[in-house]
Image (tube, rainbow, N blue to C red; front, side, top):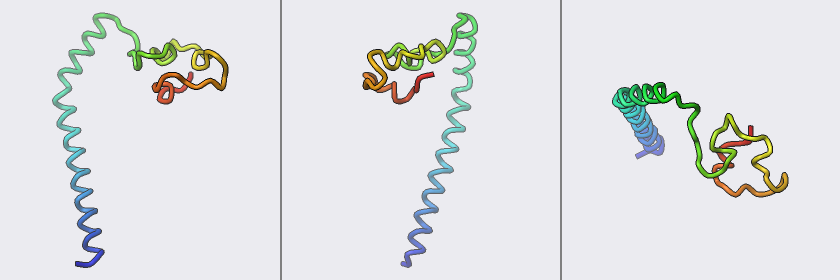
Length: 91
């Protein structure tokens, strides 16, 4: 078997996996549509604000309400105590 055939089989397999993952996403989003509508109605009825993304640090709990100085409580070069600080930069 030539190397080009092996690469072709590999790329064909990767393409097939990609198509299957897209199809799975479409199927799951259609199945979750009803649940999402119920959750949206609950949010509307309870008049909830933005979601809480993280629970550990005060500046990552609610990005719209974060303080500009909160990521550095001690000094500007202090290490971040929480891993979510690397996912949510300061506003």
